[in-house]
Structures are given as structure tokens and as C-alpha cells.
Length: 343
Image (tube, rainbow, N blue to C red; front, side, top):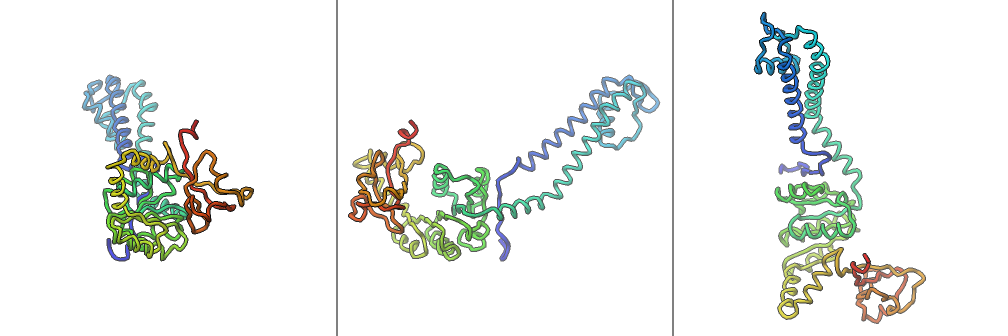
């Protein structure tokens, strides 16, 4: 990409591909010509070709339809009978007008295409706020998006950033707005609306890019929730120092699951169930209402076991003495069953 050039944006299609629309128009134009040719051949006795009457061949009929519908009109083949002229009034003239509409419409669309796309992008940027930026459309990024969707986040509130052309194409086909470029570059993040984003998921394919993306994003958005992933444990502290609210080490997490699975495979099934949003067991947050302020945590369990309490910036496990009494506004992290809720 040239220095200073704006990163390209791919917005979700609003009505089919340009090639598809062009193919449809060509098909309609060809169908018009063939229809007129068929009618002319059926009524060939009413047409004169030069000085000869009623001698139209199939090729002559197609030739007549082509020059008539395209308004070329050489005049060498003409309708002479009343029925042939009446057919021209009812069929050929409307076909000629429709052909012109198709031709002019295609030309205008081609000329206005870039302006329309520029207008769409301006409108998209104007409406872009409190959205989620997903940096990296690999395995981690795609799974993060699936979880966001399961949590109720709409596709229009997700912006994907990736510098891989295949990933950009895939994300665009999936219906997301995509910025093609490296998330480590400020210009790319600005195109994705980093200053207005509510949350940023950092999931590139290498740790250096994750750290630099996190640092750049935090520098230009002090309030967004930034969650980032790295492969190596020794790089986790770099994410926190760069401004990430949460840092996930993918290699160690996978390693622990493998270790659990060796001796207790059922535990891994439970953990995978918890990570699958929308089915089986799930982890939810419930906010403590003002009327429950000061109540013991044990009275708040109910049918959803509490595993932790979030109070401001502090997270306490259920066995922490400070969490034994809840306060209004606390977030209770609970287990719940989607099957039971659905019932």
C-alpha cells in the first residue's frame, strides 16, 4: 500500500454482486431480441426483405430483431401487413424502450458506482460507534465473532481488520465490514473506527503484532475494553503493559486442556461446554439489585451457582471473605443451564 494511502474498506453487499446484476441485464436484453425474432419469424409472410415479400429466414428474423431493438433500423426488412405492423406497435416498440432503459441504466450505474460506494462508506463511518473491532480473522477471530453473535451482538456492530486477502474476502462474504490492512498501523485502526469502538479483540497470527496492536489501540482509545491473545506465556505481561484489559495465552490454555484430558476427559467436556455459548452450561453475569444490598452471597445463589463477584475493577472468587456480602451493582458470575432456561 502506498505511503499515505487510505486502507481499503469492504462493506457488506447491499444487493448482489455487480457482475451478477450485469449478467442479469445481458440475459434480459438477449431474451428481448430472441422474443422479437421469434414473433417476426412466425409472421414472416407479413414482412418484406428488399423487394421480396414473405421470404424471411430464421437468420433474417434474428437480424431484424437485433437492428430493431437496438434502434439501428437499416430499413431493409420492413413490416408491410397490418398484423405485422400491429405486432411492431405492441411488441417491438416496448422492447426497444426497455432495451434503452437497460443500456442507459447499466451505463449510469457504471459511472456512478464509485460515487455510490464512497457515499456508503461515509454513511457507514458516520453511524460507526460503540462497535467491536476484531483484529485478525483467523481461527481465534472467527470463534470470537461466533461468541459475540451468540451474546446478541449484531453483525453491523462488528468490524474485521486483516491484512490477508483471503481472510478479507471470507469476512466480507460472511457479511462483515472489513478493513484490509495490518492492525499494527494506526491508519488501519482509524479506518475501523478505533476511537469510537466499545471493545477491541486482538487476535493476529503472531505475538509481536498482538502487542503492537494493543499498544496502538489503547493509545487512541482510553476506555475501550481490549482483550488480546498471545501464543507464549512470557508475552502475556506485555499485553497488560500495553493496555489490554484481559490477556489470553492460547498455547498454555490448550496445553492445560490436553493435560486435563489425559486423566479426566469429562472435565474437558464440561469446560468446552462452558465455552460454547448458547447451549448446555453457560457462564452469565447477574447484577445485584439495590434491594439486595448487604445480603449474604449464599442467599444469592438460587438455581445458578455463583463462582465469583465482580466489584468495580476487582474480581473475587466465591470463597473470598470480601465477597460473602454483596453490594448493589456487584456483578455475580454464575453458572446456568440453557436447556433449563429454554424449558
